[in-house]
Length: 267
Length: 267
Image (tube, rainbow over all chains, first blue to last red; front, side, top):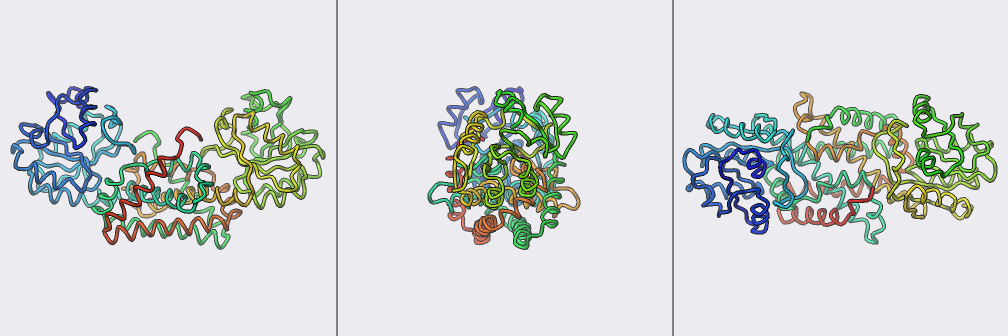
């Protein structure tokens, strides 16, 4: 995001703060940012602050930074869970706008960065009735300038949607990898994992801390999604056990039709 | 496979037979095959016959073709289930060799063909104690010439391995698509399905008939794999319900480590 903003001339100065000094050095050396500072110093006199940390650490960081912020500074985040964040952070920072760009891969850190990550992506913003309209517009303009489409929605609706299309798939992939690895003590199975398995489980290689935080913070919508998913898996299981060919054909045809209706192009 | 053999000069003549006349016309027009015939005529005087039909139709087709085959003709298949196939077909066709190339996508038909599909892929062959060694060598040479690595294994072991790394992931993807679509009557969720969801569910777009057959024919190993998978999903669910951060971190870290150990390059 920093790199994209610099490349597109969206900021006079981009200052980076990170818990990982190597990542900061990489970003500075590659010209992704203009300067490096501690978070508390970086936010002083900033027009816009982007908080990009695992969602479990977001409110703590916001509490820490709030006293250092100029009242005119706009603050946003990129976390995957929004309801608890906008409730908590919104009280301490009046010009906070909750955000969630739907893009990214299983890698993290400056070395995995690309300046065009958000071209063609969708960014969800979750303003509340307390959100300053000019702050919302500023964040919206930034995402547009980075090439993203912005959709505003209620934070609780956001959390339900991402539980289904993002968090549940990650849990399904994680369970799939652990199922195969757990029943493969002699290592005879995993070497035969072909393209389908690798495509399906790529996201399971992403940060465990990030996903732990997401699961703990989006608990209720995720438990709902998991209950529906378990029902769908058990339905397939029962059809196989009964040898119900027409029933299986129905399930697979429905999944194929839905899947084909998804646009492939967008990220 | 036909196109790859022609491109590499592995056969003096490649004759195609298909239930879909449009696919045959496409293959002939694009030079993927030399000639077109009914299956019963195509196999006469053939050195090698490759049966590539949904696994549920394989033994019926083999029974139909067996009386037309020259005793020296080598017959192989490319089906995803092997134990029932090698048992049934092996009795009627002495020079039959069960095969399963681990490659391919969610599309089918000549229009989706590529002559280099098997370069770098693994092909599993499942000879029995009755399999003619010279037939096995002929099929092995063909796969090597198409660029694949050949691994011989017992048909029952094959069926367990593919249940875990191929058939189970397909069911998980299908259940995922149907979970999200089934709880999205107003269509507000699916438009936000990003890269992770699309990567995970791509295989759900493949042929429903093919997957119905696979599920019915690989029933027992698949029910075992599904039972283990359900246990893994429920374990994640319980950790989320209890708010067990360290437990979730363990599960995600284990999945990440296993996933990272898989080679990305091969198909």
